[in-house]
Length: 198
Length: 198
DNA sequence: TGCTATCCGGATCAGTGGTCCATATATTCG
DNA sequence: CGAATATATGGACCACTGATCCGGATAGCA
Image (tube, rainbow over all chains, first blue to last red; front, side, top):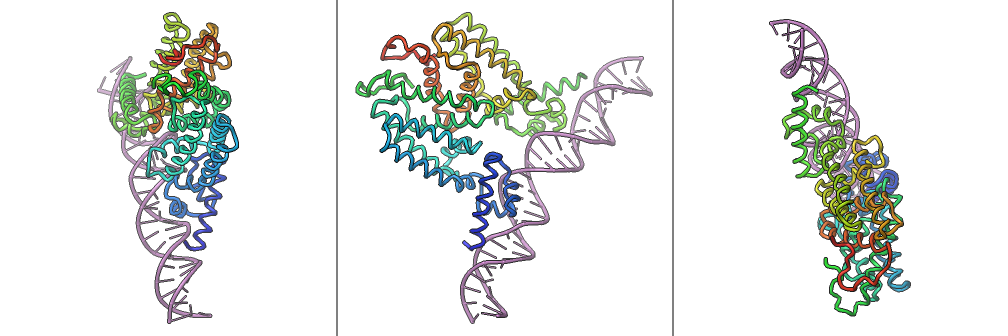
């Protein structure tokens, strides 16, 4: 890549970051281009879709969340690790207003630029969940996909101005449900058959 | 209102109904107008905004849900009434793909055409919740706003193609959390929690 | 029949994401 | 250093969106 191209790319990325922070992920691409003193075509060549732009912007944070999951796995109890990590995920996603919907769509669409990152994130969460289940502190009738959906759901809540004030409490409610289900049903020993059917 | 105007209005409304059923609430208004053999301006005169169109379309169903809450209050136990009604709300909202976001926005915006309907719905839910709390079968640390947010959250889940398969189970998880928090009484037989299924 | 208040919808506007291509420029070679 | 070439650029353009305007068609009535 030519030096000027790289410079332009980085500049656009930085501008896109602040624009999205201000107006959410649905901000007009033309606006971003304007603010970066760049043509729309240039922006679209570097980032062919909004997802691609968002992926380039969030890639570092995705990696950070994945790494954090690994750290928590060693430094915290299974229960704390799971709850802390999920809380961080929700809080982080909420910083990028509107990203939740794109991520929910991306995890099912292999062609999306965000797909790989979402899959990785889900895997990290699944590991923490599995560890908590092994330790008997998380209910056994949910899996990584459920956890991903729960995170998306809570993140979406924080995205809605009218509902956001309740997001904190409802996080606790949901977290309690994921953890208490284990205690009630008891340690995994007995059969692991789904405690409530699916 | 002139007779031809009324006829046009009703026709547009009917066409909008099927168009939304097929493509979700974000369907192009121009498409609806085309399918109704009507100019876009005509559609927009009868329904100045998308919310207004949706409100006219859902008004009857809103009323139905409100009425159903009243019926359940008399015909079912506080616990069943709450769970059944919330489940119906979620299922119903999911029929109109994308409506959840509009409703979440409308409940905070008094100028939205959907505002009144949403407020009424929230009040109906709050009554059922209060009744369940009085009966000691629902936790006391949530209120009508929380319930509305929970419904919206679960409805949104059903709207996302990638997450919808998990919506059913996660409904049970959330419902269980709302009910079990009430009184951690009784060792709740280990087999089938009567918690969230209805 | 004619008259008027009302309604209609094509034309138009500013906005969106996306594509094309003549132009400008960085890089490399003589 | 100058010329050739490969590459990046952004204005012009497209189809689409919701929204508005206004000349013309029409319903309802006398």
